[in-house]
Image 1 (cartoon, rainbow, N blue to C red):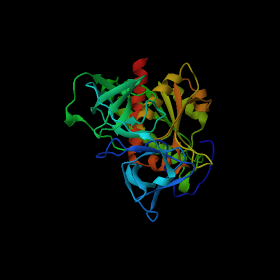
Image 2 (tube, rainbow, N blue to C red):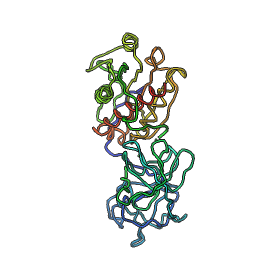
Image 3 (cartoon, one colour):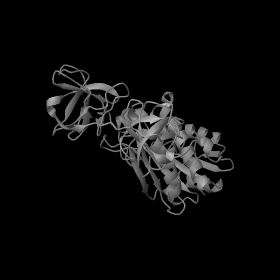
Image 4 (cartoon, helix red, strand yellow):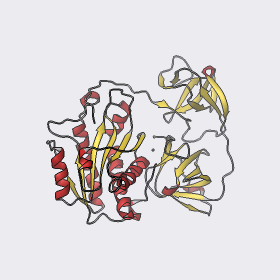
Length: 373
């Protein structure tokens, strides 16, 4: 948001930082290898002539599911892939243990299943409301669950119900491979209506102020506007009165945006932005707040919901003095929903699925916020 850069690029390398798991049908007790001190090509077949589908960095780990001609087959970006074994060091083996009779049922749609017990671990899949899994163990606020293919994943306990009865095999659901839950939410049916609340959405920039300029000339002002329109529909569906600081490509000063918030007796102000940086590897989303008294709880609720639903790197919640939130009398937050100068972020941002997930997440975050007040 703070920098204007036009970066022309066409390829983003997807770098894996943890285990690569199959989505179904493979043995669970594969050997675990670590990449040595070099960048290692990941290929579509067990041959140096096969196309490169990605790269691994020193310290990345892979699980072997079969070996052929000195190559091991693993999974990369959810697909079968091959790496040369002589560049790898064996460090252990995946283990299975018997699951207990408790099970957990997911309460929220698009809930991330992670490789470890925390939001810093990458998502290895996602689950929908009503999906049920056997509970392996609990660490803090996270449940380790047994997936339908026998592998393990972790899900935030606040997104689940835990019960003691066994689950029918037909209810087990395999995770689908796809990639921060700080605090999340129940399904909207469990939450309060937003009826009677005035929610102001602020699509950043507009008119002569293009905001950041990203890959292929994408302008932040147009992406924020498209996202805000989608978010508005979701919030209206939950009963709120939605006001937008702009509904088309026109210029609105920062002072005018804050004045509008005051004029409409806004109950929550959400400013939508996208980030940019000279280094195209910078990626992920942030939520910013200013007042620890009026803004911080709103930031935590909305960001937690976004982190549980949106497949972007979680850069966390930060305190900053952006004018539209610093001088605003309403509880206010500013969202940076990914980098338009990062090829992977931009590819996600431009999908209808992303805008829908953001709309659902912000709505649920608002419901959680007002329910707790």
